[in-house]
Image (cartoon, rainbow, N blue to C red; front, side):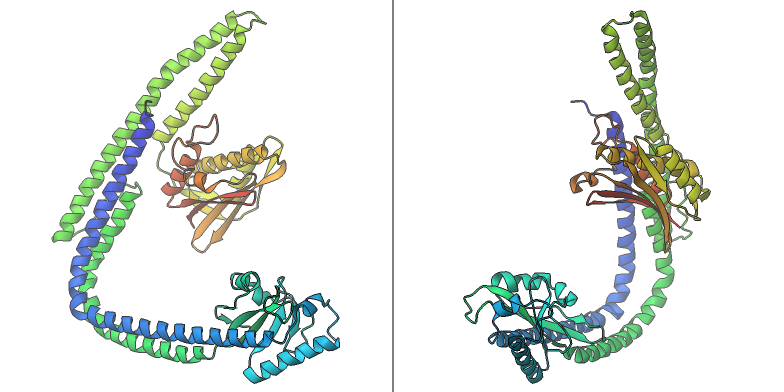
Length: 499
């Protein structure tokens, strides 16, 4: 099978950029490490490393041991309280039956254990609804939302009949708590099935001691670090300034931005490395231009005979009389030629894609325009109003959004949806602008989502596989990215740009 030359060249270009970026970035990291490590090893590393290791081990061992001890204690309290409970009776109680004598007897038993241990005891069913509680004023049927967060631990209690304890959590009163759980059997016989669970919740008082230990460790560590690194910081500021410039330049080259010159004005080794990087940037730009020219040439050479084939197919169709079955074959030929022409045009545009010309863009007007153009197949694209102004290339951003919107319309239509099944929105997130295209339809599988933006990858029978590749390249050229989320019959493509 013959490989697609465009795909091969595109992959080769990506590999060249990737290798170049990795080489330059690795060179910067090695050089920076050579300078900093010598200073840090002599001034900071030994003392800070030993103190950090000691502090970490001391804190984690203390926390783990105290947490495990509290968990076992609460599990024991819960298990002790269950020995006097018949779960079958409590399970059959309905909301409003709190005043029954037997239920009050069980509640008093829980209150007695709670008074003796200082824990809050509560019994609940598999739906996390209360059956008995040691605290007054909690009726049968009260939902325990906190217990619902411990589903995995309670699964062992209900399914295996074993004890479990929750992770520590902070209550509404700002105090840290922990809960131990034990199974409640239908009868007093432990062999009977588990129908309820009993929780014993108590404050994790040891966190006060841990917090004090942590604060002291942080204080001592901060003092040690400040004293140790003061001299190293002063000595390395001037050196690392140029290294940071080289690292930024390497990342920029890795993304394919070869326009900006690498400007490191220094006569030492860093200056030499900067000159080498800039020469490499120039060579990569020249190779990039040659490859794009080659791609454009291939597409152009294909388009010339394609135009002739389309012309003669039309002449042949005109020469055939109406009703001749051969006209059907000619129609199919012309349709396939039309598809091939569209592929060649998209291939040319992909190869000749210009750099974006940034200017203010009214996002609300752009979304409305895209929504109007993309609405089709009985599906209306809804554009949310927005007063945001973005700095972007209007034509390229419009093309990217229009491509996503049309894909969303096709996905919604294929899934049988109609009406307002596609929505365009825009919002500011901190220092980013997120423009989202949402649609109802069959979700994208994880296996497919990882390949969506690869050139020439498509799941459609007549797709070119360049549309989403265009979208990604346009976002990257604007310094942004494209995020995809798809689940529960909904899919969202989000173009994220610098605000």
